[in-house]
Structure formats: structure tokens, C-alpha cells
Length: 93
Image (cartoon, rainbow, N blue to C red):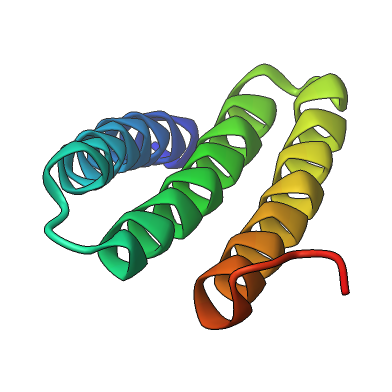
């Protein structure tokens, strides 16, 4: 019973995260301002990292956890750089 509940909940989590990524992609493409697009990109990489974590739990492989860590690290740096660019017009001072 417990393994079946875990399997179904992981499947539901994967489907909901994929839907959240689809909505974030839609906002990324249709966002009226650049700030909306940066926020959508931030949401997209967080959801991608969480989806990789769910894949890692489902398969039992540690490679997904390392990929999720790498995606979130690079996504944080990209969000910080884009935010600084939108505020000041330059990334490197």
C-alpha cells in the first residue's frame, strides 16, 4: 500500500510540475515586461530542479540530484545578473 501511494504521488508531482513549467514558459513568451520574463525564468528553473529531484526519487539515481543542484546554481546566477542588468543597465561595473 505504501509503495503504491508513493508511486502515485510521485506521478502526480511530475504532472503538476510539468504543468507549472508550461505556464511559466507561457509567461516567459507572453510577458508584457522584462521583469515578468525574469520572474518566469526564475520559476522555470526552480520547477525544473524540483522535477529532476522527483525523477531522482522515482529512479533512485543520484545523477538527477547533481543535475538539479547545477541547474539551480546556474539559474540563481542568471537571475541575479538579469536583475542587476534591469536595474542598472550593465552587469559588470
